[in-house]
Image (cartoon, rainbow, N blue to C red):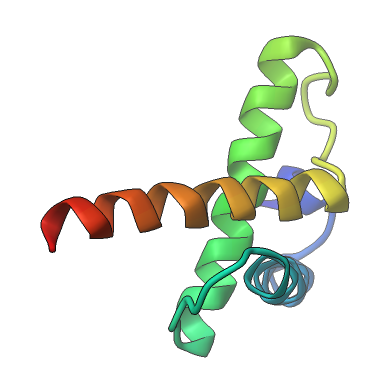
Length: 89
């Protein structure tokens, strides 16, 4: 996890929370998530951004994902979650 945000576990949780909150605020609609799932959303968004950014060549191996990319990754995950939720209903 240290390579995702470039810090320790507490830093990762904190930035994950901020990225998750921003993603939920920027994406239209009502995404009801608990605080824990908001943190998971932010961290997963960072993982997605780090993985895609590394594959495209934006990040060198071991370089952390950027904060804005983490928020964008979390927004993408929220959209995907919304699509999956609609299919079930």
